[in-house]
Each structure stands twice: as structure tokens, then as C-alpha cells.
Amino acid sequence: MFLEIAFVIFAILVMRLGTRVLAARPLKLAKNSCLTPLRISSSGNTRGDGRMALMLTALAAMLWTAPKTASAAWPQSAPIKTLDSAPQNRADPLLAEARALADKGMASEAEQRVRQYLAMHPDSSNAHFLLGYILFREIQEQAAGNENASLSDSAPMALSGSASRQPSATASLGDKGATSEANYRNTKTKASLAEFTEGAKYHPPSAFDLKIVAFDYVLLDDYVDADKWLTKMLQWTPADAEGWYYLGRTKYNENRFDEAVHAFQQTLTLDPHNVKAEDNLGLAFAGLGRVDDAAGAYENAIVWQKNAATKNPGPYIDMGSLLLDLNRSTEAITYLKQAIEISPLDFKPHELLGKAYSRLHQLAEAQNELEQAIALAPQNPNLPCMLGPLYHKQGLSDKAKVQLDRCTTMSGTHSLPETPRP
Image (cartoon, rainbow, N blue to C red; front, side, top):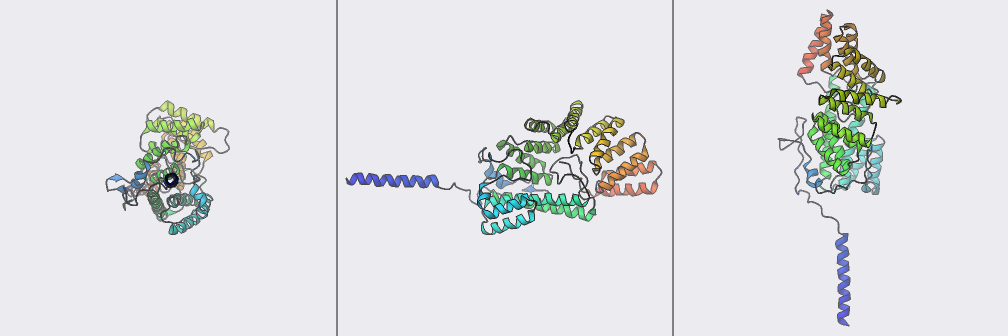
């Protein structure tokens, strides 16, 4: 009898121990285990150990062990403005409130809520990731506000792309204002990356987190790291059409045109008749010298939006640019005029139209278009270099000198880059 009772007690103990083991929380890496502190150089470029492009080493330390299905619940092809619904956010009222504020365009208020939460829970990975996202949203909101201030009807902050299509977001700010905006953007971007790095010390990031990390790197012109994190994100969420699109833009900026073609084709497989993807596919084909394929892609994008209430000027601009490269200026003018009808405050078609008229020796028309382009994008260093010689050809020596001096100054001081189109 005693032996039977002993067996029963032993069995109960085993069951309780087993339950504790099954319910035990997963082990975390120690706070300083396998992590290299994030270091950002004062030059504006991000670097690790002074040799490599800045990497989120903390993210990398935990990322590679995360399961590929870790973010399976994240909505596919979700707009950048949305955040995947993390159970931790829904469970905590303060974080849920912060996320709701961010999604309503109230990023500053959202930041205050998350910082309050982090003061009480400094080791909350979810709060750090959310704060990284909110800081990124603040950059978007500021860019959108500046474009509204300059009477621009273009989209808010573009995240990637080399061919500038949008009016300058700093057109009404002047040199000091433009520099201030750039400093603000860089500071916020680096702060966003620092939050993702801190959060990764406590928990692996989600696919959405990696997407925002990649966008941060794009804002820092670090396309190598943007490529790295978008590629990893797409391993987890291969059906994300938007992710493939931005990977294509990143590959394009790296001059890896074959890979860009593949990425844009993946976007189009997941999202047929996506005008932006087809237009950018044309740009990638053009980068490879596949002129006929490029022209075909631009025409497709134009046809696909034929009956759209709001059209994208990109395909018209790109077709006009391609035709100019082929010395078919008269044909280019037709497309560029259509682009201006769609987006009259976009400086790029005015610039290209000025070039087309100049080649056709229609100097007055060329002058008018380039003057409009400069009014829309005063920080663009190329425009005064085009307008100065044009004034000189017409005997306008004083005006020519002003523009040529501006050309020399702006080219020598590395003027701020144009706002890229999405």
C-alpha cells in the first residue's frame, strides 16, 4: 500500500514538473549577448566599425533564428501607413492608443504615449519597435506638410527611386530651410533605427519591422542595407507585392537592373496592372539597354490607367525621356505635355520638355519650360546649368551669368537631392 501511494505522489510530481517546463517562457538572449552597439558616424552615413555600411547588428543577432512564418499573420501588400496588428499592442491599452494615433496621422502624440510606456517597461520589444515605426511616420508627416506648404499636389514622402518626379518638397523653404529639413530627417531616421536595434535585444522583429528598417536605410541612401532587410522580409512574406516593389526600387538604385526586373515582375504577378510597377519595370529594362522592352512597359502602364480618375505621370515622363535618348524629340514632346497636364507642379516634365525644345532650336519655348522647372525645384543643381547656356544663346548675358554662377555654386556644394517619386 505504501509503495502504491509513493508511486501516485511521484506521478503527480512528474506531471507538475512537466507542466512547468511546457509553460516556461522561452529564453531570451542576454542583454549584451552577441550584440554590437549601434554606432552612427557624424558624417550622416551610417557605418559599423568604420568600414562597413551601417547594419542593425542587434537585429541580425536574433533575426536569423526567427522562423520564416513568424509574421504570417501580417497583412500582405498592406500600405506603408498600416502597422501589423501585434497581440502585444492590442493587449496593452497605452500601446494600442499610441498605434491608433500614429495611424490617424498624429505621430507626435503617439510618440509621447510610447515613451511613457517605455519609462515603465524599458525592456518591451514591442514598444521599441512601435516607437521606431512612429518616428518613421513623423518623417512622412513632415514631408507631406512641407509639400502642402509649397502648394504641391504630389504624393507624400517617397521612399525610394532615383529618377526624381515630384516637385521639390523644399521649394518654398530656401537653402536654410532645406538643410534644416534634411537634418531633421536624418536625426529621426537614425533614432528610428536605434529603437529597432534596442527592441531586437529582447525579441526578434516581425516582417513589418524589417520593412520599416529598410525604409529607414533608403532615407539614409544606404541601399545595400535596405536591400538586405527587404530581402529577408520577403523570405518571411513572399506574397507582399509592395515589398517586392520597394525591393525593385532598391535594386534599381544599386544599378542591379536584372534583379530589379525580377522584383518588379514579382510585384506584377501578385498585383497585375500595377501602373507603378510596370513603369519601373520599364526603367529597369532601360538600364539594361533593352529599349523595346522599356518602351513596351511604359506603353502598358499608360494604357492601364487610361480610364483612371487620377493618373500617374511617371510612364509619360519615362517614355518622353527614352525618346529624347533616341533623338526623337518631336515624339517626346507629346508624352511630356501629357505628363504636365496630369501633374503641372512636377518639375521633371518641364525640364525634359525644355531639353526637347532646345534640341529643336525652339529657344523661347525651351526657356519658358526651364524657368518653370527652376521655380518648382530651386534646389536642383542641374537646371541652372541648362538654363545658363540657353540664355547665352539668346544674347541674355546678365541672366546667363546668374544661372552659370548658380550652376558652379550648387554643383560645388552638393546641393540637396531632389525629392524622388514613389
